Image 1: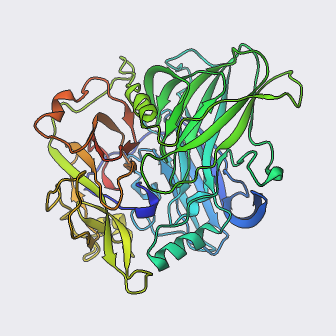
Image 2: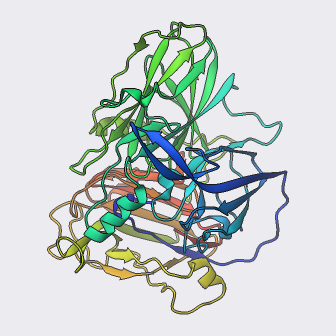
Image 3: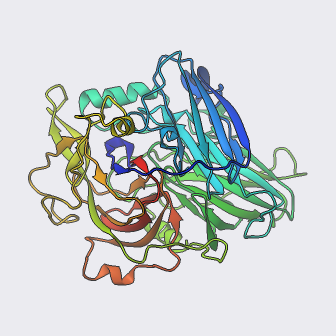
Length: 519
């Protein structure tokens, strides 16, 4: 998952036969996809939702459980649901990206997602994975440890799920259609939300008090924080309180204490909060990060942490949000994250690699006779813009259908250039449905190189079906002769989603141990 304004996809293909697994328990859920009349920011509109709620229901299960989710589509839109971060070992058919692992669920139809939570515990998320329906179709996944297995940190007195999002006054599908028709970037959102609530917003006094987090003095809580925003990287702060990060993307970390949490779209963070301040009301602030010229929704979502027993209208303790371009804050947060790397939870970082790939993430300009300027901006990786097929790629691979995709995705940019310097004169990309093939259990290193094409910006990147280790990061162009010497191959943070810094690079490593087709 990259920036949805200029989205591009990478596909990997692996085939292997494996035995069936043994399930610990079966967790069953029903998702009804419905239209819901909703009022936010002093205006009402009908949105697509799950079971009439935004966010939708939180899925609870334990490591090793088999999860069954029956989705009934009662709206005119096609839909799929992606279980973001779930490894989907041997269950690639249930991953959810439309036309990659499945055809969409059409209006009036149903689909059963069937997957097992193997070797994972922590917080993940689910969301729609077709067009921009995930703006309102999203929710959290809570994976508890197996029964009798403790957390590798002090047991909290309680747990709270906090899901961050974006809100548009306009119909989101209309926003996407307008952008497609004009060839221009889509309009930015009008506010951010905390568990669906924007909180007090200028110009809309009736927007409400926002999300309220109730705590008791002296107690410690595990906050399960999810960034389900469509585009925006977000900061979260709670006035007067420190947060100790203990997990990211359902992988335990060494405890890391901070006053600011930073999450890109699709990232999750579990953090311990102790109610150790004077009883009162404390502001929860969620604000955006953008350290370049790309427009962004600059509205801060506000909620409140309330100690039990305080007066209903107590004045809040305020907090200062980081500057919108607080690159140093994001870098400090990323640098503080390390895998737990304990005997029970080792960091299995590949020490050698079978595939060494360099992916230059860019924005191109392609002809578009119907667009405003006769051109449109498109995402690309290694100068390839992904063309969505009409047959699911996993289906095409499994049934050996011809003519759906090619396996010639380039391992490196076909024409190298100064990626973070002056862009090349020709910004047109090639178009194709291309994949890169890996053998089962091979090790992979991918250097994701940001570029200055059109405008440099921080790119969120998500890998379906795999966790990876973030072994290195830097600004400017990756230097293959020098930069690998600084890689952390001992306890790098383990994630499924990360951000490539503006005009910089990030190096990841993973083992291709999950057969199928991913993106």
